[in-house]
Image 1 (cartoon, rainbow, N blue to C red):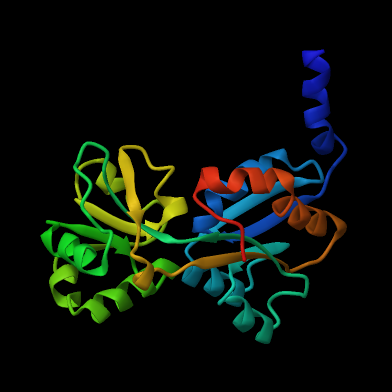
Image 2: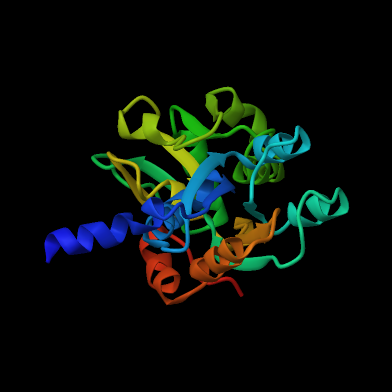
Amino acid sequence: MRRFAFILLLLPMALGAQELRVLSGGAAKSLVDPLAASFRGGVVRVDYQPMGRLVKSLEEGAEVDMVIVTEETLPGLERQRRVERGAKPIARVGIGVAVNEKAPSPDISTVENFKKALLAAKSVVYIDPKVGTSGKHVAEVLQRLGIAEQVNAKAKLGQGGYIVEPVGRGEIELGIHQISEILPVKGVKLVGELPRELQKYTVYVAVPVKPSRAVLDFIDHLTGPQARERLAQAGYTAPE
């Protein structure tokens, strides 16, 4: 029986199932990876990039079948005719604060306490505003709080991937990033979301580039029952 089940799992490859090439924002990784693995309508290959780099890849002619991008990025891609119609929201994620799992959690429950935590931290990491969605917002928050100069003097700007990994290794004291890119990182703990007045939720949408039955089926898979079960585990909420 086990051998038969294994053969069934390999059957799509053996039958020459379509390979789906997906370009996705990095914050969607912890949701998309298991859903790509469980999809039976083709072999899904996903390349994760920060949003700024992803857009540049499309502008340079990246050969992909679909993309997973932020809702605010979509209109520009549509104007440039980089994508086709049929976008579907798949998940919403907020920005959170992380510290080392062995460190005490700072109080970030109010705007003033969050500001104090940033000023008290010896070092901070957030993603480069030029390449990542949350980084642009964090930079704006620092300006709004009037502490951009003080914080940026001790900040490291991540260039992609799980940028809070140095927090887990004890190299940086405090990280600010999308929650879905904090939870999978070893050695860190999520302190909580940014205060409501400072929060920015990002909605990710799945969009066809080269529509096919397999592409449309995979987009449906990303919004189906299995995806909804996965949302909270991966740090997301359902898109509103």
